[in-house]
Length: 295
Image (cartoon, rainbow, N blue to C red; front, top):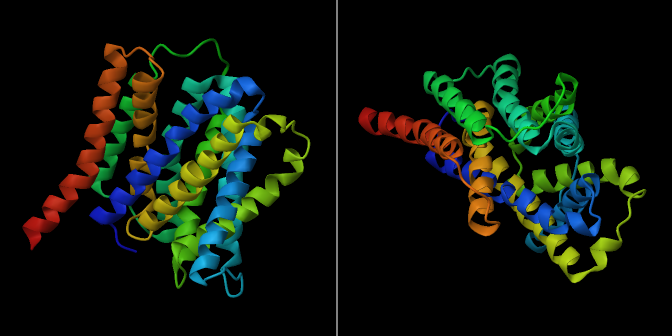
């Protein structure tokens, strides 16, 4: 695995851009009765079905023969666990604190797992960039938290750990396989794991035109395309770098809220946006300049 690739970084950022529209779309259908669990499960099933159709069109249907089952099981556990824990976490701790805890914990988990299992140590730039991004994430959510207990952070932290597990163990699945085939298997298996809970949900909202459009967007754009870009980026960079670059997601989400929902922007949140963007530039541009100088 390459430790740095500009193309890999841009693919991860593209995935973050897709993920950032999840909250915006969820806000449009929450009033119709869409629950976080139903949204998470439908994302997996629709996204997996969309990628399965793409694989069928290409004549490259996934087969689980010869796959490293440990990595596959952990990747599925990471994706499904993230859906369940994140949405429960935002209900208990609030969206601001839940997102801060989950996304802030992901780079730390990914870096530790990368060192232990992939023998991949983060670069010096990663430490400084991650510190900048975490500070920016805190400023972006400054003053948005209501009363919460430390116990409420359990699910957000678990979701951050789950996503770190996905980033770490999905990369080896790409050895000899295309990213669309790997992501098809991971999403479908994750969706099937969440299916029993989905059967207890009221899905009448799905039948409305707004519900259909929202589900297609959540499944095909925020899930299939988002995870596909992230996984393709993982084949060209490390889980630690990918996890830090994924912190660009709340910046994109904040900009959507400001531009499309009329949400106010404060000095602290603007400072947070600047810090996260600066950390992204540091992580992407500085290694590229070093490589150019070396050539």
